[in-house]
Image (tube, rainbow over all chains, first blue to last red; front, top):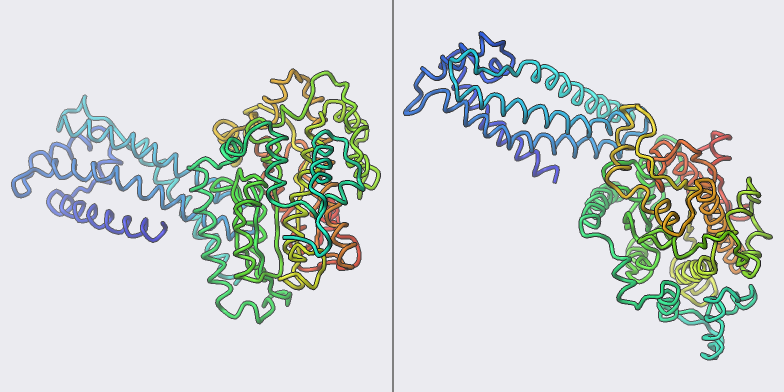
Length: 167
Length: 405
């Protein structure tokens, strides 16, 4: 299970970063810039992507595809967080850290919910490129999401490193 | 599995089984019946206790497919770690850190031993010990009856020849499918305890008298004869399993296939019937709300008792108190039987009674992970320091106070 998830994670990550690199290269803005943008900057980015051609499509089409793929990525990384945290729970003897790893399971669900809402809002904005009133901000979702992801990784790594010192 | 002596006359056996089912069997009759019981008899008794045919009994005792898969996944992870651990000369050496002898353990049991994903159960904590390698067959929601009929442990005991066999079962046979409702009467006038020679024997020879005798007295006023029949039936089942392991079913140590094997049992703590969903606002205990909302909380104890017209929460608690008290004493008695038979302690009991407390529960039946850890500490102590000639009971509460591990 763990190995399959890691493999899926690497593959989806690879495809998404390939798409992300194209966005960055041809417009100077990546998908994370859009996620964290305010209303004005976000409108500018969608407008720029809409006007920039990449092959027979625009960058906005590519960003849309990237966002669609992100739904799969969410599923994979949430399952991966749960699997890794759960496996580590079965090795972590310290009560509070064991409890924090268990809390990661809940946080994974929270991250998933935030990311899905964020993607829906982004897809809505993609339907109205350059339209200030129809741009739905995602920065107030993206920031807590990244903070929680950071916390989850920190707890997991701390437990793993602590465990390796105790061996 | 038969004994060396002449088998009991079938009519007499039937008569004793009928007495057991009617809560009229004496202790000496139970002692006489115990070694004569075979799987066929056990299957007949359970059908009578549950008033169902064997197919129906198997149906209600079967694990839900999703549950079985999740349990199997957890066992698969555990057993992969087991193989990895044992492969590296584990059985030849002692632990690096504490110098304790490395021990191989096979586990069969229910949700106290395999609670998937959400909780760190007793076996999770035991398996974290450097000198203990655990092979798990446990399944949350499993009935003792299933463990006995599936006999998965027999294969693994033969293959792995472990130092220790741990078994936990009976809880689901009592509370699964709302069975507890059939074990009580709402009138609070039951005299079945007085009629049950076996239960009275357990009470009089108790390893530990009840810490709340008044609660016990009140609880037994609601308990019907079916519970006492089930209690005796549990002992017959455990006797059958353990006698098979220790003496090959012959009643003599020299016939045992697993010389020196140590068997450890447990008997749960005093669960509290409840259907309350919210018990606090600590976000780290989010899983308590999750378990209480989605995983059957209230349906094991509270609702079945309400269905029988027992509405007072204190009475509900006292009924479960009396049942768990007697269940533990029955398990301790099993240990005594084999100590007398083999001349040394081979069957140990972890006594968790009173260790979880009022606020230590995830849901109706399962303690919070830190309480599972306390029970696990008693198991670890028992595995590392088997007391061959003293007491065969390790009290979790005493372990906590003594801080020993």
